[in-house]
Amino acid sequence: WEMRVADLSDGQRIVHLIDQTGHDAAERMRVDFVANASHELRTPLASILGFIETLSDEAGEDADIRARFLKVMFDEARRMQRLVEDLISLSRIEAEKYRLPAQPVAMDDLVQDVWEELLDSGSTRARDIGCDIADELPPVAGDQVQLSQMLHNLIGNAMKYGRADTPVRVSLDRDGAMLRLVVADRGEGIAAGHIPRLTERFYRVDAGRSRTIGGTGLGLAIVKHIVERHRGRLDIASEVGVGTTVTVRLPIKGASKVISEGAVTK
Ligand code: ADP
Image 1 (cartoon, rainbow, N blue to C red):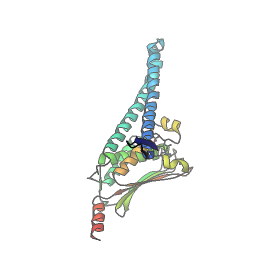
Image 2: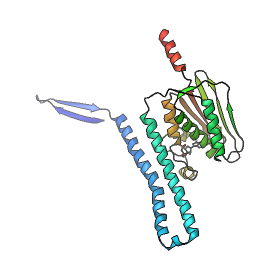
Image 3: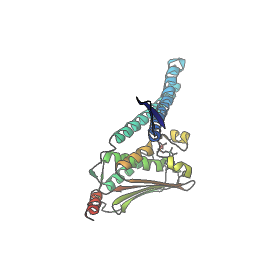
Image 4: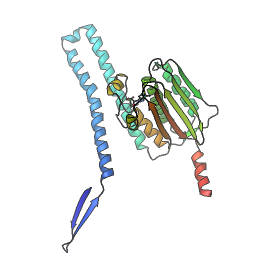
């Protein structure tokens, strides 16, 4: 609560009590976000600077050491690059929050493309993998670049957090006026207490593990914002030792218009 006091000329006093709960929470989130982002960037930057310093000494004359340090510096710089790219994506998506995306996007082709891209890039360690796309699906109203990013993040997570010998399954079908995407892995799973917080920026169940496999901690926050912008739904179900299933529902192009017109004529 914020208290504002105004003294009136007749000696009376007016006290305003203003509810600051929403404002404070938003402000705290913003401060936390800047602090987290700075911290995430500072760590690889400090490491790169340290290696440059060492390479400037005699150590830099040894070809083996030089090659090894350059590799570490490259990896750290890549990590910073991924983080900056995710930060830019997040702020773009947020800036467009109120603009409903309206291009027709063929999700069946997009899922197929992203799936093949991820397989080709070798980022899959899962042995038994499959992608099951229903026939003749209608397009959704969307933003193709953002939907592609959503698919990369979700399928990428299933491949990253799945154990080497466990299956990853992707499916796309129709569920009434929505398309339903399901990405399921049989990986380590996530304890119930963590699930509601997964879409927070920089929230990780195991920060060390996320960093070693190249995660930025922003992947699911980006997914959540993309799904919200598309007026869709995101559900995450998981069990430790069993696996994780992420379901996204996106409105079919034109379907919401028909529903709202129907509502008006009733
Ligand atoms: P990251 O870049 O760390 O992968 P995300 O926002 O994509 O960030 O995910 C947040 C955290 O949720 C991850 O650090 C990981 O701990 C957990 N997580 C996400 N997807 C899965 C999954 N399929 N299986 C197990 N844990 C997952």
